[in-house]
Length: 119
Image 1: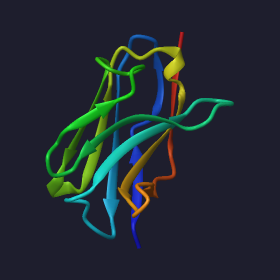
Image 2: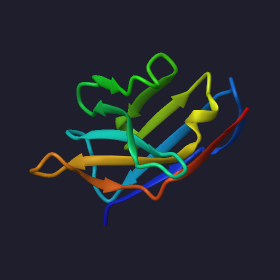
Image 3: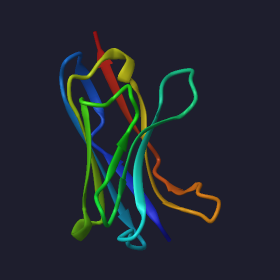
C-alpha cells in the first residue's frame, strides 16, 4: 500500500520560512515525478512545484518562483519543499503527489498539511 505522509506545516509570520517534507512508503518513486500542490481556503487545488525524480529537473508555479525550492532524497524516498519569503496568500493546505497514470494524472496523494502565514 502506497502512502505519502507530509509534515512540517504550521503557523509563520509573513516573510518567514517553512520546510515541508513528504515521505513515501510502499514503493519507490525513483523513476517518477513528485510534486506539491496547495488548496487555499475557499479555492481549488493548484500546482506549486514538481521534480523529475531521476533527473532532478524542476518546475514551479509563477506565484512561487524564486521563493520556493523543491528537492528530493532518493535514498529516503522523500521530497521536500523549502518555502521562503512567505506571504499571507501562501496560506493553504499543502499536498504531496507522486507518480503519474497512463493519462498523465497524478496517481498518489498525501493527506495534506496546513500552512498558515499571518500578516
